[in-house]
Amino acid sequence: MDSNLLLVHKSILPENYFQVIEARELIENENISVSLACKRVGISRNTYYKYKDYVFRPKGDIGRKAIISFKVDDNKGVLSNILKAIYAKNANIIAINQEAPIHNVAFIVITIDITELNAPFEEVIESLKKIKDIKAVNVISYE
Image 1 (tube, helix red, strand yellow):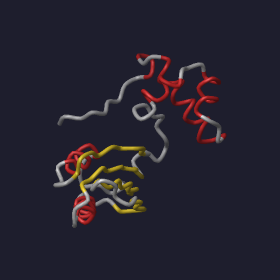
Image 2 (tube, rainbow, N blue to C red):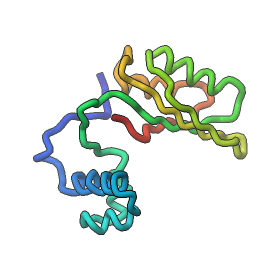
Image 3 (cartoon, rainbow, N blue to C red):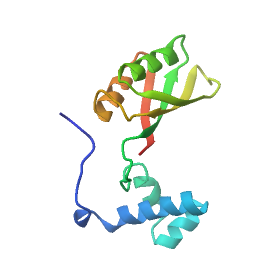
């Protein structure tokens, strides 16, 4: 199975990854700015933004929720098709946020419970990317 996710021992990873995780935790827990968090952990904002969506610290309840963003053509039935695909993979919808379309493009953010998925998470994302009228699918966060 082709997967974009790897499980590796932290000893082989660059220090920047841990600093990015620490900065993200400062931002979340202390409600401080990205600039201040980066300054505290000793990395540039560029480094933070480059890696923030790719390195995560595992939590005890890993595999519970995911936040996914979609860029879609503003056509009838697109949201319905996304929800059907998510349902088909046995995920539960927690929240949906959609902005008004601009220039026939809509942005949707969906939070799902992935506890009982009937397929690997990467496969779910790949299946969502294949839906007609979807221009982009991005995992914002997951735990």
